[in-house]
Image (cartoon, rainbow, N blue to C red; front, side):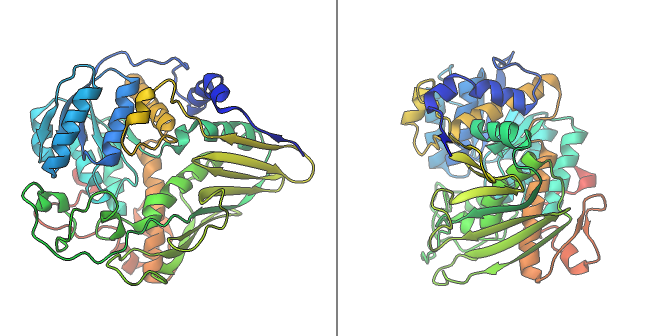
Length: 455
């Protein structure tokens, strides 16, 4: 059997943009260009917030007028970087409180790059202020937050794009079109998803005074107030359930969302999960280091597995999905895909698209994910196209909610020790009073939990 492989440069210079934008389902053609200059603000100026903003700057005319972060050092550094990257060379106005930013600026777009426990409040208030929103995944830390975000988007008629940019990843778009939609897999009746990255930042740092440049009260917001044991940025906050939903909420949401998109799946019929802290018991981290989950559909189980220790099941696909059909198998990741037919036939492989020649500034950007940059740029173009056409984007808030909530249900199932069935129309877990108490997390005052009826 012959393996087909495309040269990366030929791929990006040839068909990638055409396939990407046409498959995204936008009304734009491959040379879609936004028609106006957008006034933009970013809430959460850490690593990925800035990365999203810089990708937007690369594909559209924007005036970044304001930035917000409770860490004054990170905020000032972000302001200086944005001034270098945006056309006006102006330093945006800098804020420590997002409410003041939204009150003092008339914005077209707000990017939400804050930690997970802030996503709902930041996004909803941005919509209420009149802005369209690009919010990072997972969209929420509990299920009712997500329901309220959908309600706000529909009430205020705002476009909300979720940062599940696998749906805008050129090689995965091609895989969906040429492998899945073309029927090469046949009937898909089993899916595996996994993450074997050692990303659980376990440790025992001492409690210490909060530095003067960091507003820990504002950073914590509606979450429980943990004793301060160092700056929570980058990976530390992700290791605590107080601020998110662990590796399932962080990494499974991407793969489940991609599988749902490829196979045209909605809500799972039932979700079950088992796991816990089996190996890495020495530190403060309280998220699972080992976990399995099953998302059940008609004649199809989508199975998730993560371990933050040991070796991957497949070194070529350490964070990935695998679609098993009766005619073939598709392996997919952020880096590549591989189709293996059943019986005789050709294997098909494609690599990630890079755009280093077109966007040389990518090569000097600190901590950039070069493999994700083209996907995020296409994701931003799809977002802007939806704004200009008053349509739904590829990663609309409702789709982001289904993927996020399904992962939250997995963690709830692991905690309760039983499968869960969620009814999205009634917004409740069927016949499970205890599970329903977990649909909304208690908020620390004075912050108020958003509800569907009061956005």
